[in-house]
Amino acid sequence: MLSMIQQHHIKYLHQYKGLSLRAIARETNHDFKTVKKYAYKEDDNSLPSERKKNKGSKLDPYKPLIDQWLQEDMKAPKKQRHTGIRVFHRLKVVIVPINYRLVGPEVEYILQNYIK
Image (cartoon, rainbow, N blue to C red; front, side, top):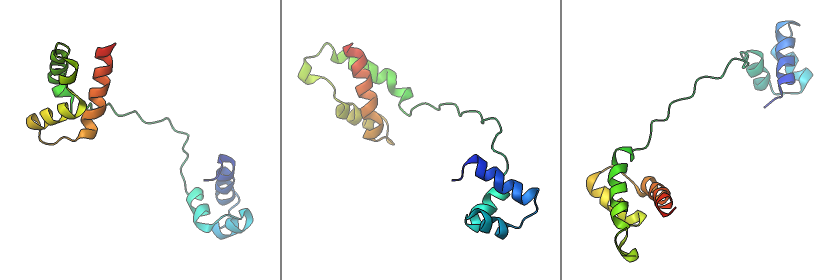
């Protein structure tokens, strides 16, 4: 990618000096395709577009259920508590389209909050 100065120089040579794209490519020692790209490129100095709103997780509807399971686990002996994989398998019964990569980090985050 060229610096802004180089981009503006190419645009200047093409629009104001009237040089052809091939002549600009020879003069600036850039590839013809690169010169063509920046000669016709619109200014990128416009305001940034609005950010997309966060959709949320697929687990959001099931978080109260997971919280309930983990709260009940606090009363159970340590070896009988839910792990991320156990929560995943229980959710698999409730929800069909889910994978462990979605569940694991979420359960770890919730467990860290319960421990604190």
